Image 1 (cartoon, rainbow, N blue to C red):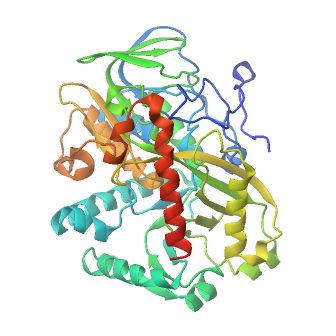
Image 2 (cartoon, rainbow, N blue to C red; image 1 turned 135 degrees about the horizontal axis):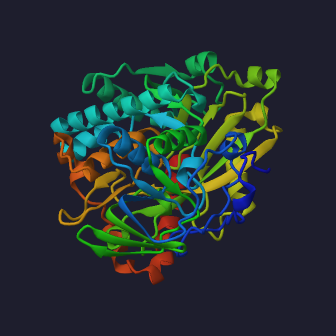
Image 3 (cartoon, rainbow, N blue to C red; image 1 turned 180 degrees about the vertical axis):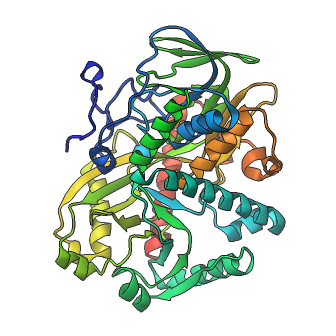
Length: 475
C-alpha cells in the first residue's frame, strides 16, 4: 500500500530496499523511502527537515540516527542544555526501528525481568535501576502528554501466559514486583482475561502491570522532530555517514554531500548500526529481524467475537514473543520473530508464521484481511540490556544502543541521559550498569568478529531459534 506521507516533489525518495542487512551491507541506503508500515501510511504530512548535507560544515554535536533516541537527545540537548545538535540520517526521519515497531511503551528497558536484575546485580542495584526505569517511563509519559497527536492508549501492560507452565513464572515475577519494587501488579485467570480484556484463545492466565502506553510511533517521532527543529536543531536526511575519522574533539563525519566536522559524536542507530562505522560500534549488538502486520479494521461482530475490551499493550510469554494490541481505529497490530537474514526477509513464509499466530490466538479472525506487513531490525545486546555510554573518557564519542525491542518508552529517557553525557554532566545514576559499562559481544562470537565472517554468526542464531521454539511450544 502506498504511503500517505506528503513529501516535497523536489526530493522524492529512492525506492525502499527490503533486503537491507546491517551485518553485510555498508550503509542502509541514501534517501530511501520508508518501509510500507501502517504508521507511515497513517502519519499524515511529514514535518520539514533540513534536506541532505550539501557541503562541508562545522557543528558542535553530530548525532547519527534520527529515531526516537537521536531525536530525543537532540531535543533535550537544546531544551535543557542550550546545545543545538545536528542530526544526520541516511534515509528519512525515523526510517529504521522507530517507524517499524509495535508502539508499545512499557515500564522496562532491555529484555531482562526485575528478578533477573536482582540475580545479576543484587537487590540494592536492582532497586536503583528500577527507580531509573520508572523515571524513564515518566519522561516518556511527559512527552506523550505534550504530544497527544501520537494517539496514546493508556491502561497498562497485559503479560499473557501462552502455556499453563508459564503461570508459575508470572506469579513469581508479579510477587517480586509487588514485594520488592512496590508495584500494583495482580494475576488474572483465563476466564478473567476473556471476560474483561480480550478472548485470546491461547491465554492460560496473565500478569497485569499498571504501567503501559501504546502510541503511534511515527506521529510521536514527528512531534519530536518538529519540536527539536523549533529549538534550532538541524536534521539532515539522505545523508548517510560513510566513515568517521579523527579524535580528541575533532571528528570528521564523511557523507556523500560533504564532511561534517564535529566536536562530539553520538551514535543512535539502533538495529541499523553498521560494524564498520566506528571502532566503538564494532560487534556490539546482534541485529535480529522482527515481523509485524496490521489487519483491516475489525467489524462490530469481530470485536464481539474476540471480545477486545482493552486497548492496552499485550505481550505473551514466548521467548520469541508475540506483541499485539487493538489500535484506535479497531485494527489489530501483531508482531513477532522474522527471518534470520535480510536476504530472506521478503520470503512469504515469515508473514505466514505471523498470520498463523494471529489465527491461533483469535480463531474468529481467520478470514480477516491483512492491510499492512513489514519487518525491521532490533538491536539486541550481549546481556539483553541497553547501554548509554562513553567508551573512552578522552574522546567525546557516545552511543545509546541495545534496547532489545523495549525501546519505545525508554529511548526517550536514554536520549535525555545521552544529552547529559554530551553536555559533560555526571549524575550519580551514571554508576548504574547500563551507564558505566560498554556493550560487549558474546564470547560465542568473538572468533568471528570480522565483517567478512559476520554471516556465520547466523548459524548460532538459527540454532537458538530452534531451541527457543522447542522450549516455547513443546517442552
